[in-house]
Length: 118
Image (cartoon, rainbow, N blue to C red; front, side, top):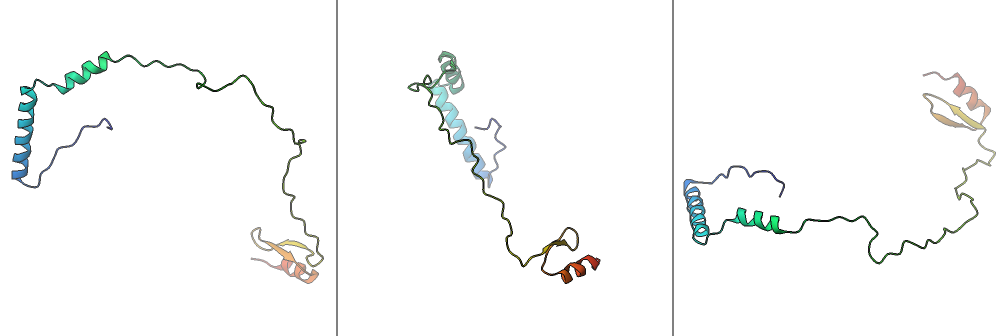
């Protein structure tokens, strides 16, 4: 089905190989007796079939003439608002090391963070 040739068949022993050859020979004799050439019959059937035709149109039973307008919701985007801190404990956000954001709760912590090095 993939269009690739089959590889060489390997048998377990010489008896199986001999039996496979005998079966293949008897099958060819049977086809010759009944005058069956599968390749030729497939080719003739394919040549006699009518060619495929393609039409680009809408599927049958589907009306494409009428369109319903979309509902107008007023044009307001419904997005979630960004969280805003409204408490009084955190004084700000400091950067300690390599863009590491740290909350600052007192002015003493702010001085410590500003004096810290790596």
